[in-house]
Every structure is written in C-alpha cells, then in structure tokens.
Amino acid sequence: MQANYKMTVAALAGVGLGAFVVMVSGIATALAQDTVRIRGTIERIDGSTYMVKARDGAELKVTLADSPQIAGVVKASLSDIKQGSFVGITGMPRPDGSQTALEVHIFPESMRGTGEGHYPWDLRPQSTMTNANVQQIVTDGEKKIFVPADAPIVTYVPGDKADLKPGAKVFILAAKQADGTLQGRAWRVGRDGVTPPM
Image (cartoon, rainbow, N blue to C red; front, side, top):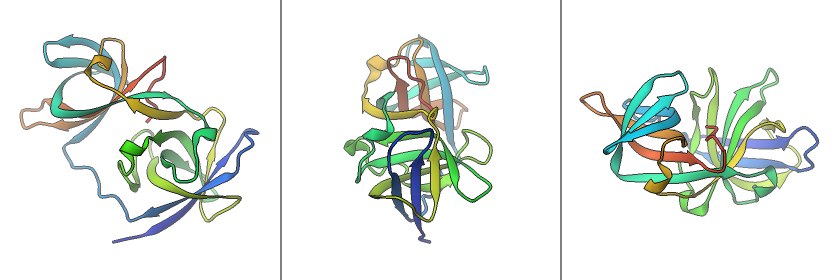
C-alpha cells in the first residue's frame, strides 16, 4: 500500500524560517517484533558486553552485532535543514490535526533513507516518527509540524566503537535474541553533552 503525505514543518518561537514541505512516499513497514529501542547511558563494559542503564532504571546487557552501525549525535539547528535534506521528526498530534515536534534529526547523505516513512513511535504515548526527504520550502501546506524553540535538533557524524564508553548517552536499536539477550545493531551516541533525543 502506498500513500503520499505532504507535510509542512514550521518554526515557532520567533525563529525566522520558512516552513518545509516533506513528501513521504509509502509507509514503512513496522520494525520486526524482536526489535527493542534502548535509551540510556553506558554504565560499564564487561568484555564484549555493554551494561546500559535505561531511562526507567533497568540495567540491560547489550552486545555488538557483527557489523554495527555506529553514529555520533551532535547539536544542529533549523537553519541546517535545506531543500533536499533527509530528516526525521518525532511528533505529537495537536487538536487541529497538525503536530508539534518533540525532536528533529538531520541525516547525512550516507544515511539517506534510514527508517523512511511515517509510523508510530515510542518516545511518548501517541507519538509518531516521520523520516522523509525535504522536497521544497513553502509557506504553507496540508500538514503542519510546529517546531518549538526548545525542541532538540541534532545531526549525525561518523562514529565507531571508541564512542561506546562508560558515561556515553545512547539510543540503540537492538534485536532480542532467542536466549533473551540484546544485540545492538544501530547505535546513536551523544557527543559534547548531547543526549540522543529520539
């Protein structure tokens, strides 16, 4: 099934930028049932196992996949979003049908297409994730996402295993293994005090 979405991302709080129209082609299929999203801090490393303290206080043991995708997360701004940018926006519905962005992340060209589509997200109840290409800049559109001044805006930089150290704030897409362990396939690691907001 395919659907097209026209989305306008408008800046709030006096940020003097135009809105962005994002065309999304197709709906991304849901992540596999065994996928677990982990948000937390690397507490320690025990051999090849990373002990991660999740936001809810749980301590999780996460191993690295054979070819993990590791990226650093650094601060960015709305002015970094250009026509042709591939962005991801976690949003919450508003009474008028528009959405308010909880966070915005800008993908580098090497990560274009990551998680493309519009689907439910677990950052908050009723939140959604939209990963799409910015086709053009306009002043209005069919669907608006308002970006408050306090919404985190980040981008990705190359990362490697050296970034995975105690104290690092992480967002991990992990696969639950048959024995109940977690295998981290995609790791997003905050740099310079940034906590991955997604």
